[in-house]
Structures are given as C-alpha cells and as structure tokens.
Length: 249
Image 1 (cartoon, one colour):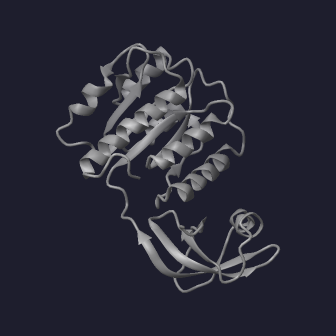
Image 2 (cartoon, helix red, strand yellow; image 1 turned 90 degrees about the vertical axis):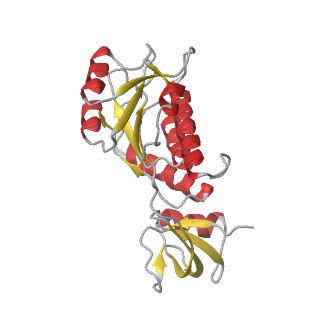
Image 3 (cartoon, one colour; image 1 turned 60 degrees about the horizontal axis):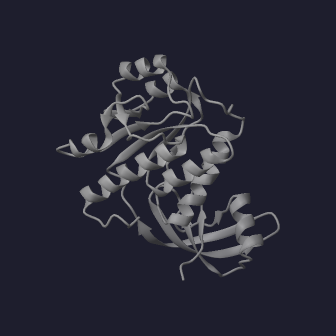
C-alpha cells in the first residue's frame, strides 16, 4: 500500500517542514497520523520525498523529508489549456482532469458567452483542486493555474507556437490536425469556449493571434466534454511519441 501524499512546496532537504493548515488538518484529523508515521511529500516541482511525521499539534504539523523517493524532469510536452468558467463545480472538475492528464498551464477565460462570473477566490479553489489531483494521480509537476482573464488578455500571454480553438461552425478536422505533424509539437495551446461557443469577434481575435479552428466532429458537445476530448487526444499523442502505454500516467 502506498504511503499517503501531502503537498509541501517548500521542501528543504535535511530540514523540518511545516505543513500548511489544510495539509496538516488532513494528516491529523482525517487520516489521524501521529509522530513517526511515514508519508510522501510532493513539492509540485518534480520531486516526491519520503518523510516521517515529527510533531502533531493542534495548530501545527511538522514533518521531516529524509530521502528523495522519486523525481521527474520538467515535461518536454507543454499544453496551455484555455478553458471556460462553468457552473456547478464543473470548472473545478476540468482542472482536476487537466492535472491528471498532464496539462502544464490552465487558463480560465472570460469570453462573450461566459455565464459564470468569477468570484474573488476562484483561483484558490482551482489551485486546491489541482493539488488534490496531483496527490491522487502521482503526478509530480503541478500545473500553473492562471486567474480568470478576458480572452484577449489570455491570448497575449501565451507561449505556444501551435494554437487551435474548438469551433462548432467547422474548421480543420481534429484527426487531420493531430496526424499531420511530422514531429509532434512540444508547445501546444488548445482553447474551448463556454456553452454557446465563441462569438464572431472572438473568432477574428483568435485568427489575429495565429489560432486555427478545430472541428471536433458532427455532434454538439458540452463545453466540459470538448475540453476532456481535446485533453485526452493530446495526452494520447504525447504518450505515443514517448513510447509509453496509453493507459499509463
């Protein structure tokens, strides 16, 4: 049985580490772990440390990282995901799945047909969900979570050279795009709009920033379905290039 994982972004080898109040609560009150118990610590930057619990107090939990258990290099393939804000916790759900599927940057976008208005703590909520997914999945790199921004502000900040947006009125067939690369791009940006899609003005804005329209097939997909579809296709292609089984994280 694997040891429980906790998020500790500021691990210093050989020095005691104070867990955040939320991680400490999980260790103390949910899992009911005490001193000398063995755990894993994830720093979100490619390292997993084997550690032991030093002290469990009412307001503080101290742990001690003893040895580096596992490490991953920075991902060669980077995905910038521009995703819509959706109702009913679906934005958090998408961040969870994007983390599991190894997206490297998640950008919530405010577009013309966005219904949900971003609350003050939305970035914190999305970050929390990403950390939970990181611990559950065993992934070692935490994706960068952006604060919600208007579409143009988000497009200005992109780094990827290859850029595509899902468009319900047609575009290049998805299979044709992903099979056309002689060398699969290491930097890719994929954008999905809210229920209602993108406006004509936003389409022109995408074109201004060198995006191409993607046709996801003959059926109307919900926004979260389109995001998951694109994430899965991208991840499958990455695993093919890396020569790893497609059912392995």
